[in-house]
Length: 386
Image (cartoon, rainbow, N blue to C red; front, side, top):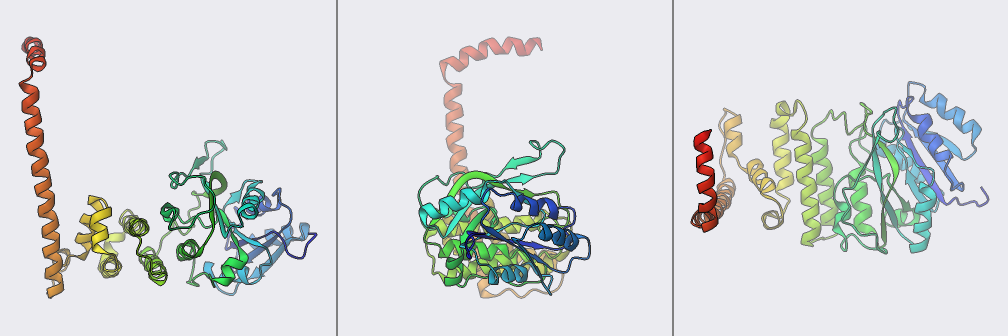
């Protein structure tokens, strides 16, 4: 490298990634932007991951290997942040890989707009002999326009959907000035979520482009998104996200709508997984604690009926009575919640009764129309023939 300060520091955390690590690192080595440093942080792999990393480091002086004494994604990432010298930070997970022009394109945008964050879309990658069939573009934020720099308040959809912290780059000085770090939980622990929220809420200049550069491998059975061993993790990470929302004093209803949609997405993520039922006694109080932190008025005003139904379902003490044969003490607060739930349900019944009356009038009007009577006169003989 010509300069002491590389354009980008690429952080690659790894743990037993021998099947993917070579493709991952080589995709970074082969970037068209050459003025980078590659920091590989391994958490004590006991397969051939380190052997492969050492071979690659011997061939490319831009690679530095760090050994983490903890098997913690957040701890590994913080080692990378502490040792990074680049103007910007990029993250590539060890079972993924990137397109060769990703860093150059994102860095050009970062310099052009003096951005704190540059985000892009990504491919959901499925291992397949046919490379084109193996990819599916993520478009969860397709409503965000390719505009100049914006803040999260100006385009709240930036916090909708997958956090995808690796499909972008972050200004190193911005992270340090705002003291943005990773939670150091054991294992992966979905700690990318609060990092994503902290950066989004802090950033003064965000750039987003609908160009997929990152290949996010969906077919690794050991990834944290596929192998969720602790069902409390999504809820605990959402609580961390809510801490960040409260830290920044956010009251914007459209932002909170996106935050709340994410909270319900995590609940549904758990409910879709096999074996969650046997953990519900532990999960329900945690979900209740999370939901109690949501503004009920915004839930009712901005969320869909299925979210509202589940909001009351989890907060109501009635399912606890059904699930647990032991005595349940109903408090005044519980009664107030049941009352509100009943008011909501009655309002829905009233709404659908009104809609039903309107439909009946419309049907009657159609039946009395001349065209319907003429059409019926032709249709009736056919029915008799059948």
